[in-house]
Length: 334
Image (cartoon, rainbow, N blue to C red):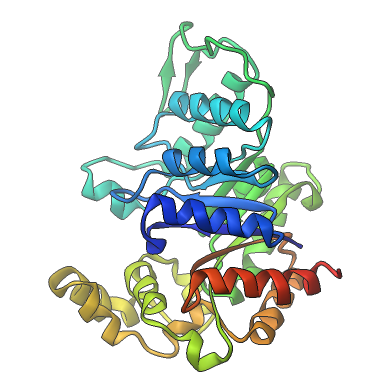
């Protein structure tokens, strides 16, 4: 199994995220992914700085969406980051949360179609082609082509999502898939859908790297791992998760209704008071041994890379060191 560190605003400033990425590389992490959420720190800036302070880690965004960022700009950014790092860039893309699009007044009627067309456009641009295009979502002229030559004509594209159609599409067209595994028990279903998509497209499921996104909080024991930053993640994102994933641990959108309403009306601090132990099952938590056993289940389900995200633990730096010393070597058989 490969290991990715997934960074987001929950770790504070851009510099804090850069420092954690550097530490993760020293601890054997293979990838660094940075979230690109609306109204939060820009992953473009963060990953550029990480690129200048690391040597080996592969760098990607989780995820870029083709509504707020045009595929032309995504291709420009990827080619530039790839050039800067000597070929360490990957692309994480999906439609993103449709609720975010509502905030911005963006009509998102065909998220799967828009994602498919964006992937086609990005790949065409990076390959050096003149990308004249007439699609349902994008209509480009013959002036659409790169004005500089990317160092690679194909950058790996990882397609994110949690719905059936997006999971199948990631298997059909992605170099990798970025399924959201909140909870981790969703892995069996997600991998099945990804494999079905690959098979329908005439591909071997083994051609698609399954890079599963998880929340993790690791500490010396289970009790110490249950911290407020974990509850904040669950309260903020839990209501936005898909029903099929939530159902794996006996949850539904109805269970999150009060949490979501409290967050909107009174803020996150009040909303976390409503987070239940069952809701905390959306994350991997506990001691290194506890977390290791849950990660082994992901590997058995067919997850090739695990993207370990916030909150990491009571002290993120200590948690990265703990993962590097007590989890990564054991899963890699070192």
